[in-house]
Length: 385
Image (tube, rainbow, N blue to C red):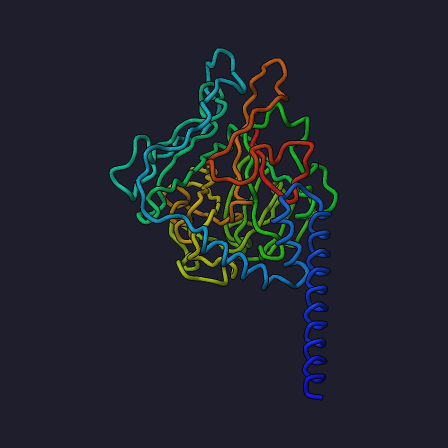
């Protein structure tokens, strides 16, 4: 009799285990199918993580990501032998009559101060990349170490002159979604003048901010949110919405993401090493991963900063060292941090593009924003007529 009860209990446990395993298989299959059918050209792992968070399973992804980033954290120390290779500056773009008069342009920034000395050759020095206009650089790149801990990891800053290059916000098919005048990629008409593109901010459910383009709101703008603002005259600005930047008839686009991390040339109180609420509960401010940010200099230039081994604090410090007087974080993680350069090797057909990455650890291909693939998330396009 006792043996019969044991067999029945064992049988019930086995059935329960089988039932639970079946539920897990069904839920996993459902989530993978849902992720795979999500629009956009994101990788399946990124789509799956986003799908799980959107369906109330973020706690599972958070634990998995924390485990993954702990295992794959960048190595501390190490010796940096050389900087990353960069595209050469090219004499293209508009040319005035015998260059008799230079077009309006911004002064070049001073070198980025080093925290690791002596630096490797060229560290912290701005190097022209991409097309020039009447011999003037539209973009400059400086490479440097962000701190004296991850001394083999390179952080890169891209300085962009908005008086010579045009910057525009491109909506993604999922973020913010909806119908816009611009497709979710660099359109064929824009390919001949495209020189670079870079990632935008967080998913809007995490960004704590909004999106404005084409004279309408893709997401409501939030007072106090860090905002990258583009204007009709081509100028740009970064600041806290409602105080440092506001809506005017001249505003073309606004992308908000979290709160400012550099203000009045100083690191803000929120850009700490250990915050786990402002910069994301999954990774937190102290987690060293790929991060990106953008700022504006005192002269009005745009500065994009990114690297494979940054905390929220060292990103803010890197923006400050690169000359940003106001700055904000953009997206994080290797899947999403992207800055790509575009060259036009065939003058007879400038629509043919050769794409390259700002730094080799970027996971997505350099063709991420090129047609016909549709970008899931919004991004910024840099072009030179």
